[in-house]
Image (cartoon, rainbow, N blue to C red; front, side):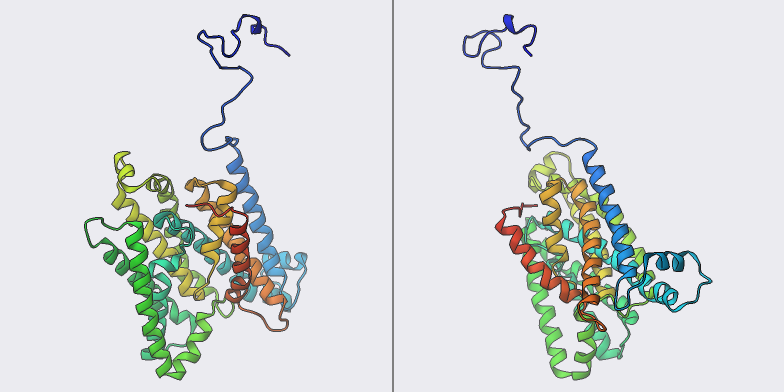
Length: 367
């Protein structure tokens, strides 16, 4: 239908105040088509619903499948003492809760790492967290004879904390301060040193190798509810810091000088982000061992849908990380019945081809 004032409008190219402007054309915003204001919240709600469904699947499916009705009855009736109820409450529920916590932590830590280092191949291990935790666990086994996963937690967490602090100090040396490139280089150098020490100890002590290999493969099995309770406070604080740090990452992505010019305190944003990464990745690695690919792949998959805005990228990465970790754990329990394949191995098999597919489809956007 023609606009009622079309007859009085000058045609394009004839001069006048409306030269070349047609009312039927709309300019596309520089960042692409604008999304509906409610779309991100709807996406978060969908991910939460998928996570709830995945949680129920994780509790119900395993080496022995249990119906959803039986699962619900076991969770709501503590007096029920059947074999299925005991399996649900004492084995699968703590394992699933731990999987949700670790998946959230690694997904969020991966998004923060790629944002702070501006490196599309960055994952939490790039900042020395995994190497520091591995060295601390080996030392705990070798020097103190600790062989229980619950005993590894504090040593692994302290090692992760030490690794991140050293990376930050090394990356801060010089006039430029702790920039993305210096942090990545310091993390690579320190990780190489830590892993060299780990290999030296394992080669010289076979008993340490036997104990360490069960931790380093990355698994949710064999961890009780006590491990989840130990890491819960650190993950909670890390998630809060990550959400507070997310808006600053959009400014840091423009460059440190531009961010300072816009009023961002770069040093505070870096410190907050590194603290969150240390708490999240350190606690997750301490509880389950190094789990590869999750922190690397998840932010790229989420970024292809949400875009680069970190206030949505960070929480969505956490939810997707928890979903993928639980699904990988279920797959590991199903494909090798009556045994199981550790979740770290399953994610390595699935993560590699998935990342290659993202690259080939050119959906691997920069942070």
